[in-house]
Image 1 (cartoon, one colour):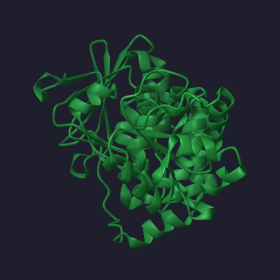
Image 2: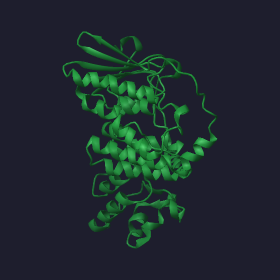
Image 3: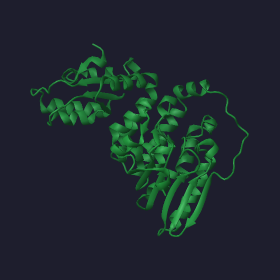
Image 4: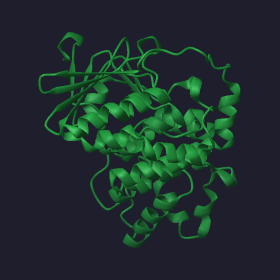
Length: 342
């Protein structure tokens, strides 16, 4: 029987033996997929359900459950322990296919999300950075780098962040419009400097925006693979972290986003206490397909807005969300036309 054909009862029954070790990238089964659309088995003991929850929390690979209309009951605790829950067979197949393409990154993602669910934001950011650093040295990211065209180095744009004081507001604008505000090292450092001003003036409201057609297209792909060793890169993220600074001012921070909000563009905005998006905004976490996990704080910020299971589903599949769906999920707080955002 393949993993994709397991029923929930089959899965729970199989846990009576040490067979749970079969689900791992190292055994050739990099994802546990369960069809939980059948009726609940009232004969399943409380001990068996607790054992299932425990196994799911430490499984070395992602788990995904296909759910239907289910009544409330003890089995709901098992479903809540899965890394991803979906409602259609197509969604289940998409998650399985995505995990199969980059199983090491997929496994690292769910490990970070599981552990981060009980950590503070600061602790979760440290864990995320360590997971990201691990994957930077891994074979999946190396394969992605090797398949990319050569980077177009040598072009330096102006100041990547613009800061303006307007009455009682500090307006911080990502300002690389020709590159859709791709998040470069220079932009990261400039954003940290701007946010230091916000911390120095605790009575100011802070607005975060992006110039040009997009809020941010995510990490500057031309810089991928050019960083120092992963350990030093981790320490750089710990030393210069916009995510930590944004989280600290979240109650007085408003993010106004539009167009592409990819990778860091979704992750950083999600720290804001209030996120307003134009109707053309799209949100995506594409990093797992690159052999990485979100590295700009998304495993902490997005999870706290939409939950661990939806965050895992987004990151594993690279699905794009439109503004209406993002609003329904709570990733953003309001949708407005461009002229009304400010």
